[in-house]
Image (cartoon, rainbow, N blue to C red; front, side, top):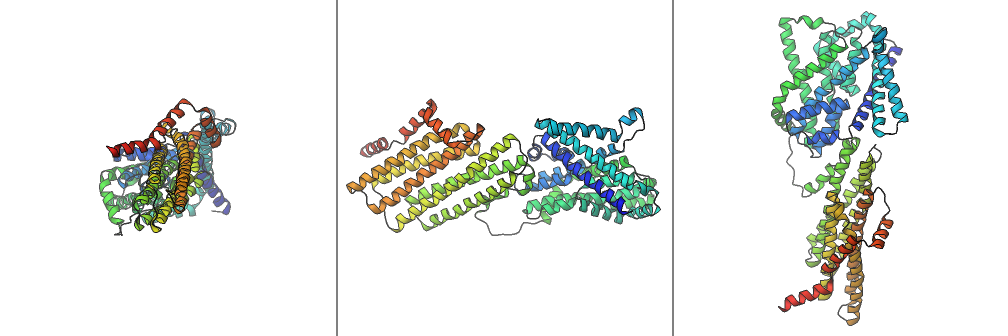
Amino acid sequence: MGITMVLSLLSGVALFLFGMSLMGDGLKRVAGNKLELTLYRLTNTPLKGVLLGMVVTAIIQSSSATTVMVVGFVNSGMMQVSQAIGIIMGANIGTSITGWVLCLSYVEGSAGIAQLLSTATISSVVAIVGIIFKTFVKKESYNSLGEIMLGFSILMLGMQTMSGAVSPLKESERFIRALTMFSNPAAGIVAGILLTAVLQSASASVGILQALSATGAIHFATALPITMGIGVGASCPVILSSIGTNKNGKRTALVYLLIDSFGMVVWSILFYSVNAFVDFPFMDTVMGPVQIAMLNTVFRSINISLLLPLIKWIEKFVFWAVRDEIEEEDKDKEERADFELLEERFLAYPAIAISQSHRAMNGMARKARKNILRAFALMDSYTKEKYQKIQEKEILIDTYEDRLGTYLMQLTGKEMNAAQNKEMSKFLHTIGDFERLGDHAVNISEAAEELYEKKLSFSEEAQYELNVLEKAVQEILDLTVNAFCENDLETSVKVEPLRELISVMCDELKLRHIARLKDGDCKLKQSFVFNDLLNNLERIAAHCSNVAVAMIELEAEEFDTHEYLRSVKGLKNANYSRQLEIYENKYDIKRNKKSKKKAVAR
């Protein structure tokens, strides 16, 4: 086997892998990037999981890719190990579909209709149509369809190149003698494992085996152990992907290895034990590309059929093999679970990555609101423990910004549709505002600490005004966080009128405080803290407004915050004015104070 032949074979493998990847990516885009979301939503029964795993793997052309995706689902808590087992079983069968597609590359014809149905003709026509769709048609769906066609043509070309490279070997007695060593089960299995571990693709390994079979030198005795080894070798990238995952992620990766190892060990023992006594006559049967595809599918299907009723036992085994360690209870475990949602494995699947980012940002928004409420409570009842907790949660919120920001920036380089780009823009515009809310919680807690340590207190009137303002700020926080988490535009439009009122209230309270200073009701040393609190409360409302504006503007497919605010305030439409009036009545300091005095008098 000369250097030219080796290079030709390797170039065929390269074309094959590239064509398979290109075709799989195009198929995913045509499916609307919903395959991944469907994968973890429709797995409530083992049979559904198997069928779904088959379909998804047949589309993306890789059982390893499906399983790596599932490892990410389990690691992030989106899926249970029991659900993942069914999908992995289905992926084992689905990956054999590629072998049947590759059989098309061996369709040949000499003249007439037979020539029209030959691989060269079909590949040429598909490539021409594909490049037209890819280059000249602007519609995204046709563009993706062109990519699928080009991927198919390159894949067929790769197979033809591999077949052409090894074709002279059918005359080589040395090559035929070398292949006979793989009829030894152990040698054949090791060869299949090593080949697939290097290529990281069971489909590519089967393709090479099919190309070799075209020489007529592959017999059943050689093909069976190599096929069994291919399944085990395909688990290598899955095992590697589980490095750094939690216990459940490692258990899921182990499932893939366990399923294929079961087939290899059990069938090796049963088949070769029986063959030792019976001496099956088909062991010397010459295998062609179609027979290789049939062997691969039948072997995998029988293996999964036997394992399907044993899903509960498989789950128990992997939990026994990868045991939970006894660890000290982490008080932040539940809160930090949001970070596990940001799986790097999902970056290749924008639909999932965006959904996970939204869930993580919801956690960040709720924690920022909670920390501000803690700071409000600290003003009334200061303790060092409560103060310290606010500082700890601020570090957590900063970590959210860092993790989410990094993850979203990595995601921006991926190909996304219009709706996904809109969601990405919303997250990038709002993440900083949620982080700033946490900063203001810290500022308020520091004001509370200063009042406590210096033994300062506000006058009854000043304290009452602050309480009313705090309630208004709490409402704008609730409106903003709920609107963002539920993507509720109707709620988001209620934010800006309340922000305007809070701004007016802060200005009014500053003037009232100056009046109290002149009358001697308040002292200068309290006034600094009072003004700091007003500034922080006003800024909280402003950041809430920024989030609401981002939601509204991005829904309208444009983003000009200042223009939006000018238009809203300028028009003063009926809804805006009505909502502002509701807030003015609700947080009218004078009227609320009179009502309070009447209640005391009674």
